[in-house]
Image (cartoon, rainbow, N blue to C red):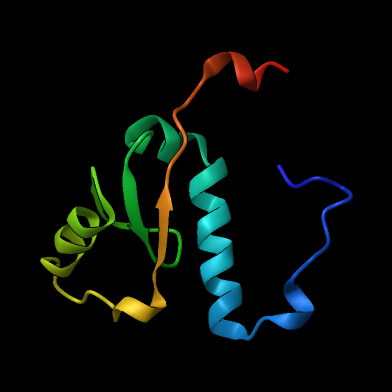
Length: 90
């Protein structure tokens, strides 16, 4: 979750940058994404994981193989944190 004292970047980002930032935050905080992809690099676009792998290059290669893959500059590239069940109860 975002810290209440963390400044918002929204006024300084264009639409594409805002979308990438939202996908990045989604990958960091979504329980299902963390359970499935924790510890791996993912390529995310519009709350969908297009590719995953041990490295960014592997994740991007997996995404490129999918039909309809958006251009590279549209994706968020994220190292997803491992899911820790005890962190949910705090």
